[in-house]
Figure: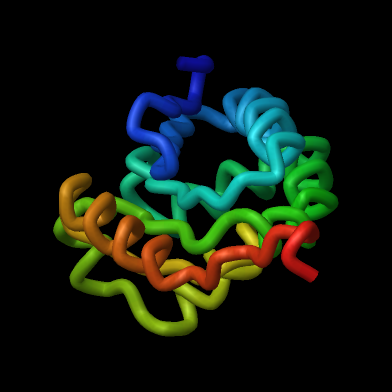
Length: 138
């Protein structure tokens, strides 16, 4: 487990960002994940509010730029991101807020009210992902 990433339930990768400085660590961990070229999904358990994540990103411009540069590769390998939100944040989450999350990650974003719901939703989305055709079969 990295400082902000837990891969123990692969292909669902748990992300916990507590402060803006964690975003650089997250970008490092995502870079390692992306080099594997394997489908995965992200479960963001902290912060538990999308507005708080947005504030962190704006206060860490270098990390924000790094994450933006990773977006195209995240779109290719990250099936979806589930944000586990606090009850008050979950109740006020709108499609536009989730659209902002999609712009951060480059993949579909969903809201969940608990970690288990997030995990099950992500596993379902990963199961729907088309399987690649081996080059030997072409």
